[in-house]
Image (cartoon, rainbow, N blue to C red; front, side):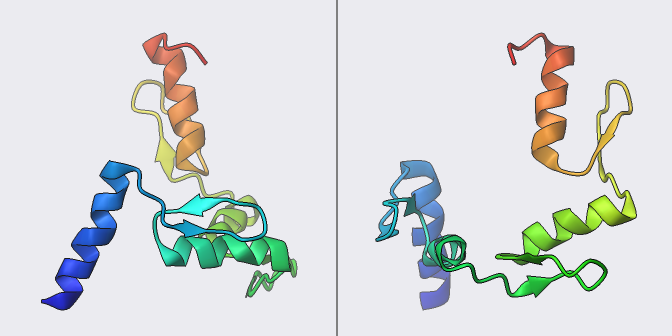
Length: 104
């Protein structure tokens, strides 16, 4: 039950915008400790997630997955308007503004 409550507290920070975890090096603020730890790897140069094909290292597993798509050509995010595909979701979101007329 405590674990569920802890998750709820962390989740609420998304809605409140509360970011109690601060990077002492640059002042960046984060809503959970895991994001702060991942961020701190940038300052320390720690890149534990290495892609064996090319030897590039990354501070998080999600960044490694995105990088792998460069090598594989995988583009899992497809525009439902025109069918164009993208390697990362934010690029799809930016592209979709073309169809909606929203300012870029």
